[in-house]
Image 1 (cartoon, protein in one colour):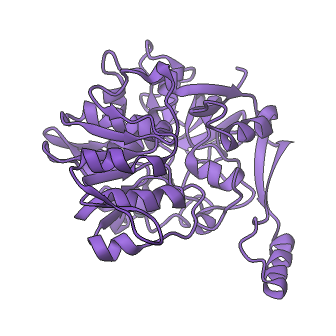
Image 2 (image 1 turned 180 degrees about the vertical axis):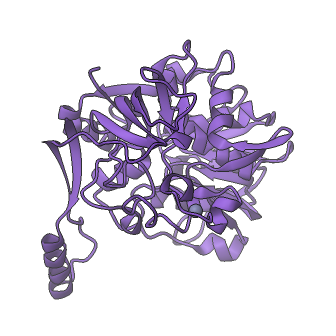
Image 3 (image 1 turned 180 degrees about the horizontal axis):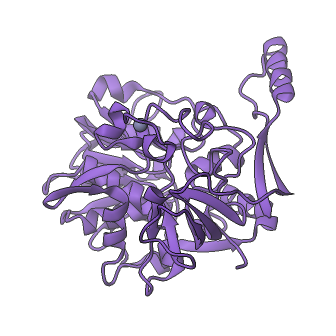
Length: 408
Ligand SMILES: [Zn+2]
């Protein structure tokens, strides 16, 4: 089958480190390569596993960090090479193991990608998995699979940037027949937004800021509305939003700032704070929001988000993408509390505790909720360089969600 294969050259890494030591040019790109190749199809590895033919696979912020910005450092401990990326996947079931119930061949599915204790067959479950937080599982390198935090980061499962991959039955969700694929492909990313809001919900009177109007930011604004937050949300976009997104965020107040650094006045007005202009250095906000969701993962935007957060208030970091050094000053001067969230788990919702993926699927089935407009670009695997170029110049290209579309 056809696949984009990620690999790592130890020799080149050693050479790069030698050069960095000798010539002091540390911080250059790491030795990660991505090549289109013909590889054998994966086989299911047990009676509880499912094989899926890929229909669509998204490019996430984490993928962008790895393949657009060539920064492997945050993920190195959670990958096994060579692997096929792609963890936001929609496909058709082509084979189901004999102990798989409720998932039939030919059904259209989306997949929760986390490879924690349960898919790995590790017992007893680690403390993170017991408390419903498999995204912080301690066993990402144990059990029946090679190391890897996700389908799309583990050499044994494959990933969606290929014609076919495998998943444990606990990871697979059958889609309602009437749900469009362009909508459903966003469910894995929407799950992350739902988890962030459920784990760190705003109080009704809280001032709430979402930094970033990339897909995860848009989905966070939608999750806030669907999970019942009735108050205003200030969404600090990095670029003007297209008219196709008008009205998609309920009564959220969306700025049209050309760059987050131009949004300080709007932020100060929104939180009833003031801007402090120092004689040297960066401007900051006195006061700030009760809760800020940072959805882009770039070092620059995390620094802005810190400055938008109120004294003693909460900043939730939701993505990893192009990290860089940033000024921690608001941590000391504002006592900001920082939390990270990633992927899925089990969360309290209404009267019970449910899988976040199921909560997200239920919310995505709400009448009148459409993610379709967020999918702006589709590429075939052969066009991967164009896909990454599109993301590199996302604002000029009006790019929101960029996906690989397979021919089925
Ligand atoms: Zn675990």
